[in-house]
Structure formats: C-alpha cells, structure tokens
Image 1: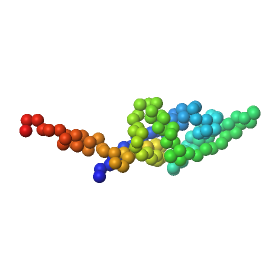
Image 2: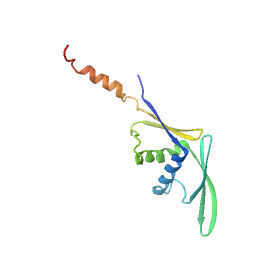
Image 3: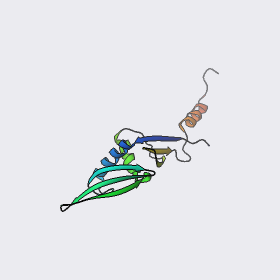
Image 4: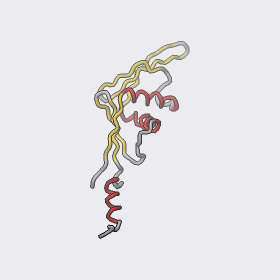
Length: 128
C-alpha cells in the first residue's frame, strides 16, 4: 500500500526562534536565563545558558537531541501557519545546520490521491 511522507526543513535560526518562544510559556523546558551561544554538533544542539542567582553568574551547557525539539517546532509551525497534520507520525533529525521534521501519514489513512481516485470510481460517468 502506498504511504505519504513529507519533510519540513528548519534552519538553525528558525530552531532557535522556536526554542526561545517555547521557553516563554514552558518554564520546565530549560532553565530561565539568557542563551549566550548555540552550537549544532552531530545529533545534538548545545545551548550555553547564563544563569544569575543571588548575584552569582554561571554559564551552563544544555544538550538537546532532535526529538526533544518536537514540541517547540510544532508550536513554531502553528504560529507561522505551517501545516502539520495532528494524526501524522513525526520524527526529527539534524543534518548539517538544519533540523528536519519528517511527517508520515498514519497507517490506514488514505492518501489524498487514493481518496480522490476512489471518489471518481464511485461517480457515474456522464455522457457514456
């Protein structure tokens, strides 16, 4: 059976915008502080966050793999009118300086082309 598969590619700048926006409403995602640096290395995005507590300044590194960015990226898509079907299976991976979200139609979901073909078969042909 045919399957539908899509990819949405995000630049590192877009990933950082997604992370920054997501942090505003999800305090448990990353600690409060200023992101001073971000580095993509292999399959990890490392963020250096400056924390200030009681006059003490500390910079800590936090590594995120691509799967940990799924929620921020989906929220980013919603805010930027990028269609991401809710029922699709999602997977995330880094390549070079980009994040790729792969979307696959759930098993059993008809493909749009297949659904159209079935509708056309059900219609009587005119003029025949």
